[in-house]
Length: 68
Image (cartoon, rainbow, N blue to C red; front, side, top):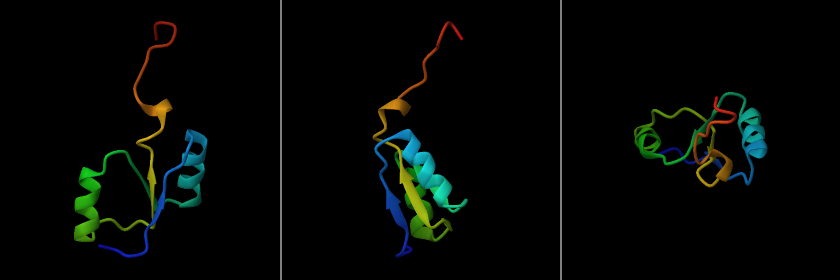
């Protein structure tokens, strides 16, 4: 597993977006991590940062608004 991967657990969606943007295409979202752990252990993950969105309540589901 790589040693120097930054881990972010932002408290809001806007801060998650900022962390992804700061990663300049080398950050990955995680919300469970099953496949990511395999990639980390095998060396297949080439990114520099992980952004954990599991705790963001705004992303807990999908809802219809105004019937759409």
